[in-house]
Structure formats: C-alpha cells, structure tokens
Image 1 (cartoon, rainbow, N blue to C red):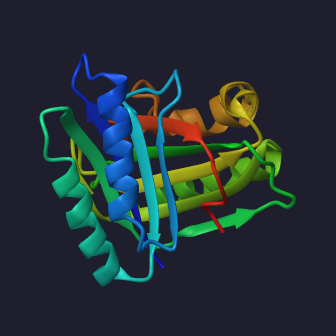
Image 2: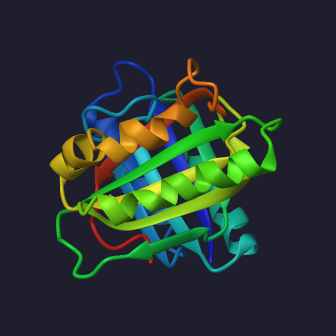
Length: 212
C-alpha cells in the first residue's frame, strides 16, 4: 500500500455550499483508493487546514494518478494552500475493538536533516512508545515521507485513531509521556530538539478504519 495525506487550507470566507461541493468532488475522484477519509477538520487544529484527506492506494502509480486528480479539483480560488505528504505504510499497530465515531489525527513534521541518525532513531522510538501508555489511541502509524508539498519539507507523518475527541485533546496531549518524554524533541529550548518549522496538527471525525 501507498499513502497520501493532504491538508487543504481554504480561503477566508469560503461558504458551506462551496465546501460541500469541494468535498463531493474530492470523494468522486478518489474512488479508486482502497481506503479514503475526506472530512472537514474539527475545531482546535493547528496549521491543520479545513479539509483532511487521507488515502490508501494500491501502489505508487495509483497514488500518483489520484494525487493529480486531487490537485486538479483543488485548483480553484477557494483553496489557498495544501500541505501534504506521500509516504509508505510505515510502522504502526492496532488495538481491538475499535470504536465507532472515533477521531483520526495526523501530524506532519520536519526533522532537522542534520540530526544524527541515533537521535532520529530515538525520536521515532519515543513516538512509537506512546500507545503503550495512552489507551485512548486505538491505532497508530509513523511513516517517513517520500514526497512533501506545502509550507515545509515534511519528513514524517505521525497518525493515530482515537476513541473520541477527549481522548486526543485530554488523555493524549496532556499525558506525562507526551510532555515529559516526547515534547523535548519539539521544544526549541531543549538541547535534544530536532523538529524544525511549524508542525501541522490536524484531526477530523473518522468514518471508518484508516490505519491497519
């Protein structure tokens, strides 16, 4: 499988009717994807866009074709910018049973290309430790980016499926393993920091399983 993530930022003043039309067109041109999530983002995203699009494709050829169709649909005045990444399946896991009405979250980030390999490996390992301690995470995946678009040269995509919005905004973001272990990689005042630029923290309602 090959994955596509797009965070679509809309121009100020874009009306509900135009948003609905854009969602309909995006869903129509991505029908060849084996799994698709195309939903408005929820309040509280940071640099996360207004529409979150996440697709799983059969391979790079299929992903390229669908990506071109998505770009064509988004070539309109209502779309101000797109942040996105194309990436392989990465490393992740799933906890059963999954919950209906859950929340899907993605984080696009750029690690310093000059960071030592050992530091990068430790950073990735710390992210993947989080589901052991935070039981509101029902599925997760960490992927290195092959191709990036938008406001930064993204290097990683960190994705999770949560029980509900409180499981993300409370149990995850406020958990000691988050602020006591993982935040040091993001905080420019910490000597271990390797994350550069502003991250994209985006989330939306999950209509079906995305990660597996």
